[in-house]
Structure formats: C-alpha cells, structure tokens
Amino acid sequence: MLAQLTFSQTLHATTHLLVLFPKNRALPKGLPQNELLTAVLKRRDMKADELAKFPVAANTADGMLVTWAMLDDDKDNFAQQVQVRKALQLLLDEHPRKLSIVMLGNEQQRQCAAEMAVYSAWVNGSPLPVHKKKDERKPLQKIMLVGSVDHKPFDALRAKASGNLLCRELTALPPNELTPGIYRKRVQKLARGNGWQHEEFDMKLLRKMGAGAFVAVAQGSDPEDAAIVHLSYQHPKAKQTVALVGKGICFDTGGHNLKPSRYMHNMHEDMNGSAVALGILLAATQNKLPVNLDCWLALAQNHISPKAYKQNDIVKALNGTNIEVIHTDAEGRMVLADTLTLASRGKPDWMIDFATLTGSMAVALGDRYSGVLGNRDELVQRAVSVGKQCGERLCAFPLDEDYEAALDSKVADIKQCTLDGGADHILATRFLKRFVEHDVPWLHVDLSASRCEGGLGSVASDVTGFGVAWGLGMLQTG
Image 1: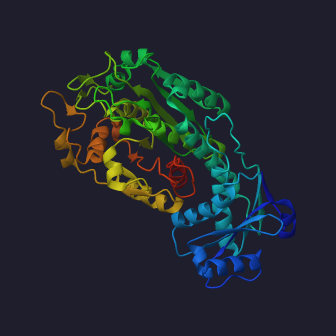
Image 2 (image 1 turned 180 degrees about the vertical axis):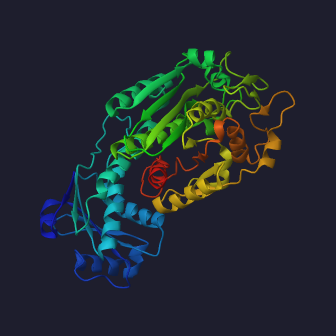
C-alpha cells in the first residue's frame, strides 16, 4: 500500500522514517529531526556533505528510527540507487510493517528520490523464501510519502518490482523445489493467472522435431521432465513483436565433465535467465505495455548418468547443424541453440536471450556488470544506454566473424566450445548466432551480475534479479 501524508501525520503514523535530500555543504532548512542529525554528525565527526557517501541512522527520544541520506545529482542512476538502498536497509533490517519517506528538494529531485526509494522498498520489503523452523521476518505492508510528487509512475514501478521479485524468488528456490517438472507447473499457473497463451514442447515432441541439441543435455535426467515452454502476451495496440528467450537449467552438475564442489554450489541458480524472461513478461503484462511478447523458456537439468551426453558426441540441432560436443558443462548454449531456432522462426521484430552462460564473462566483468553481444551494432548500443539509465549496467563485447575460427570442427559443422576456454563468452555467442534464423535482430545477455554478494543497485539481496528492469527499459524504448 502506498499513501500520501503530511509530515505531522507521518510522525504519528510511523516508527521508521527515511529522509532524502539533495547534496549540499550544509543541512537544508526544515530538515526533519534536524537537531538529532546535527548531534549524530558531531558525535561521528562527520561533515554534512559526507551524508552523500554514508547514510546515518539514529533513534528519536520516543523510539522512532530515522535514516538520513543525501543524493548527489551529479552521480549516475546506479550510484544514487545504491545510496537509497543502503539508507533504506538501515530501516528494513528491523522488518517494519510501515515505512515513511520524506523527500526534499525541487520538483524533479523529489520525484526522482521518491521513485528510487519506493521501488527499492518494494523489492527489498518482501523477504525471499528461507527454510527455517521460525522465520520472524515480516513483509513491509505500507509506504507513506511526505512531499508533493506525481503518483502516476508508481503503477509501472510496482509492475517492475513484481517482475524482479518473481525472478529472485524462482532463482532462490532450492533445486529439489524447482525441478523442470515443478517449474513447468508454476509457469502453467502463471499463464492462467495472467492470460498468457501457453504451449510446451516436451522431450517426446522435441525428439520427433529433431531438436537434438536440447535433447542431448536433457536426456541425462530421470525423469525426463525437461521441455521448451512458449508463452505469449498479446496487446491490441502492439506495433512490434519481441521474443524473450531464457536459459532454465534448474541444476547444473556439469554432466560427465563434473564440476568440483566449489563450482557446483549455487548451480540451482543456473535457471536465472528463464526467471529474468518470466519477470519481464509479468511486469510488461501488469504494465499493459503495447507490445506483443513471445517468451521461450528452455527448462532442463544437466545431470550425469549412463544416458547423459558425452565429450565427442555429435548431435544434430533443430536447424540441421551438426555439433561436436567438446565439454558437457557447456550445456547452456546447447539448450539455447534449439530454443533460439524456435523463437526466431516466429520472425519477431527483435529478440533477446538471457543466460548465466559463461565463467569467462564473470572473469571479465566480475559480478557488478553483465555482458551484452548482438548481431546489430545499434541494438547493442541501445542496450548499453538503457543499462545506464535504469541502473542495470551492461558492457558490450565484440562479435567479429574471425573469432569463429576457434569453433571449426574436423568432424562436424561446428564445435560446441573450445577446451582452453579463452574468450568463451564471445565464442559462445558466435555459436548461438548460428541458430538465429531469418537474420532476426538479436541480443545475447550473459548474466554475470545475476548474483552479487551484498546486493546491487536498488536490490539488497545476493540474488539480484538483474535484467528485469533493463528488459522493461528496452521494451519501452524499442
């Protein structure tokens, strides 16, 4: 619930108060709890403008917890989001039921501060599921705003927060609670609740169709509950159709090239790309965006078994390409290959795939950026620009043709990958490009920022939901 109150009403209605104001050398006039803040700064030997780096919190005499933070207009959206999130977290750590936010400054500054604070409160005020005998965390139920702002943007922010929360909830589920079969049932329920068209390509049908790349990965699992799931959202005023493709490996052992325990930990999160695509679809639906969306989810597991695919196997993909298997832990590009073919055969105006695909992208960027590559320079440039605007930052990588020489095979049309792993994020994208038909404009997002210890941007949890806000931004500017 979101409410607008006067400051006097807020003081009587809240136990947790966030105060946001523009950067200045001195504290602004009329600042709530000014005397208390002055005393806190004196005790900590801080200057007023240091609040632009370090939010502070203190309790009033009657027990209300107040947090103050300065926002620097000269900093980019990401930096301001981090500042708001850190200030909010000082309050949300106590799991309040109600929260008040005071915004100071000119009209634009108040609006910007309110939108960042409300969105961050929504995505962080609902705890992700945990499995404890006693969970004392309570969800945030009410946000009260003090200061004149336009409330129209909040419906869109609420939809974006819903998409982010769905993505993070799915990603955080343990692997025994989100097998491909369970995932498919959850998706069916979401489709019914949101009016999406829904169809599934199960293993029997995929074998019949000749989707050998997907089947090669999924055949090692028992039961064979893997599938490619297709969801559609239609808008009567849509002027374009966009395809969203998501890698949904619900657990990745590495197959016969078994991962060591250090690298197998958190591999239940290897389905994050599918959760990002679902989160965008949900947010776009709730926001009633005038665009047609086709969402393709490649849901499978990469297990080791006598049936599992092996090094040096040669498999034929849906588009007829023969693939030489080099490393069974490069399964993501295999399931995406056939899924991209299906998605591109629908001839969308453009398409995006999301995947926690390569370790080399994480080596290149760490966990604070994700990488983007594509077959249209202008689309890649727009992707980077939208990332700066929304605070989910992307770094562009080259996709030049001469990289593909490393994937030449003596016994098949293409190698799945190389054994040395150099520039694997680029080679993986060159591989995927082979399966995009009809020269559909296409972006590949390698989600190295799907998990960031301590949070990222507006999001406080390690699982970030990176890509949902960016994907919505791309749809809105497309």
